[in-house]
Amino acid sequence: MNVAPHIVYTASKLLKEVIRTNRETKGATIIAVINQKGGVGKSTTTINLSAALGELGKQVLLVDLDPQGNATSGLGVEKTPEIKCVYDGLINDEAADKLIIRAITDGVDIIPATINLAGAEVELMNEYARERRLAELLGPTRKDYEYVLVDCPPSLGQLTINALTAADYLIIPIQCEFYALEGLTKLLETVKIVKTRMNNDLDILGVLMTMYDSRTSLANQVVEEVAAYFGDTVFRTKIPRTVRLAEAPSFGKSILAYDPKGKGATAYRELAKEVIDRG
Ligand SMILES: Nc1ncnc2c1ncn2[C@@H]1O[C@H](COP(=O)(O)OP(=O)(O)OP(=O)(O)O)[C@@H](O)[C@H]1O
Ligand SMILES: [Mg+2]
Image 1 (spheres, rainbow, N blue to C red):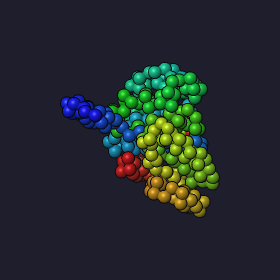
Image 2 (tube, protein in one colour):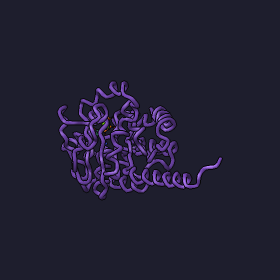
Image 3 (cartoon, helix red, strand yellow):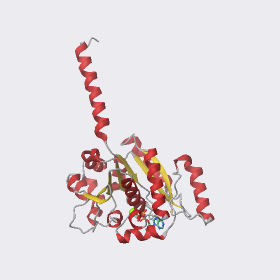
Image 4 (cartoon, rainbow, N blue to C red):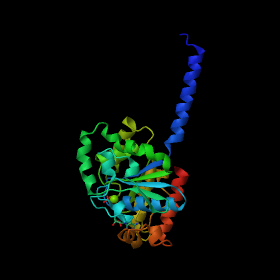
């Protein structure tokens, strides 16, 4: 086949431009904090890792994708049903910048969740390309941030599938307790399906051991078990069990603001450095 040289030239130039634009406009690294098991430290990690990245001078957007709204209230946002929330973006096509509450803590903006989000699981079923709604919502605002952290609900429903489809990376918190690995196979199967069908670039950034108490042999056994299963994927940083981390959300503060010198704040600062190195 004979193709005129100027067409080949124009096509290759265009292709280079498209690739370059893609790279330049992609912007923030999107990290979903995910585990369908409840109470393992997803919201605590999303809040405090966001704050620690913000403290290091990064521009961070926290997206609360859990109708419980724990990351929203944990950063002091009053989640009345009247405020706009991520639901309005996913279902009512509101632009992300209409939903963002700015500078909630140093370097961190938030798209909040209110109880309105509870309806989204069912309503998403009727949407066109329903698993891509979050990716579409975040697309235009991604260039304004270095990291977008998504706090997922404790289920593998439509909201979590949206997070998996939008994300570049996952952080999987695992609580250092009995049955820690329960449900992980199901989670990894879901990740594999989304990666194959919707989001080839999806990767696990790291597995995070939470609520670690070095004095108990159980916690150490769990850490060993998880290391045997996940190897280097496990973050070096373990999040200690400390009552300060449990108290901070009731003051609407991150641990960095509530107890800046404590071991919880130190651990989340270390984690932020590891995240920057990995992602
Ligand atoms: N390192 C820690 N030390 C002590 N308490 C913690 C720690 N991390 C989390 N907690 C507490 O454990 C409970 C569960 O944590 P969190 O809400 O972060 O989990 P989650 O995975 O987001 O839960 P859910 O699945 O309900 O969304 C909360 O009361 C929280 O304050
Ligand atoms: Mg939570």
